[in-house]
Image (tube, rainbow, N blue to C red; front, top):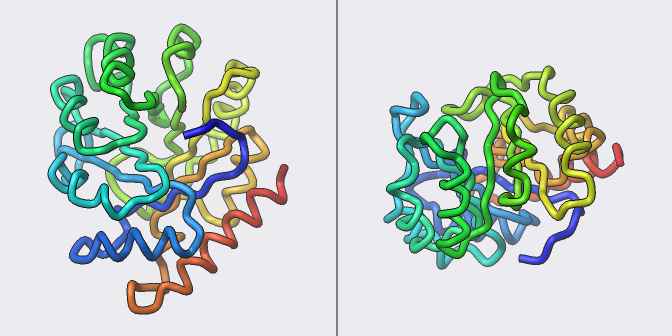
Length: 229
């Protein structure tokens, strides 16, 4: 993974057909996805239950771009090595998911992955400046984590601008997760984001048998996002 600030669209497979994840992943990549976003939820830290390390390992061979794994689980520390071994390129964690976020980020890097910090809508940026030298990505949640298809929370735009100023010229991605559409994408790229996670907005209207709408949706988000730069 080489760092650059070009706009990247990262479809969330939370909105894919779970019975056909391999072909769904190949379809979104063929239709222009830059990264593949994998939402891991434990039914405890967030009110939903999705994938564990065996599923992540099973889909890894189908991903030729970047596997972006977002851990919404607590405690998170005992599972970092398993997700790294399953093939994650990036592992993002929430500061609330363990007692020592600095140590958690160190563990992700020690396991050979890029380290991401995920910030919930109700969590401020206090303390983030002490972690920036340990992270490769900061994911700003623009919905409360747990479910796809939620409404975008506009109060997070100011947070992204503040984060962008804090990061300065460090090689750190700003990722946005939640409610991304062609309408909200330009708000976030104008504020400084470069990675846009989109689930329902990418997968709507298409299928493995008819993947062309995936490409149309990805291009619509990318065009709107780039127009704001």
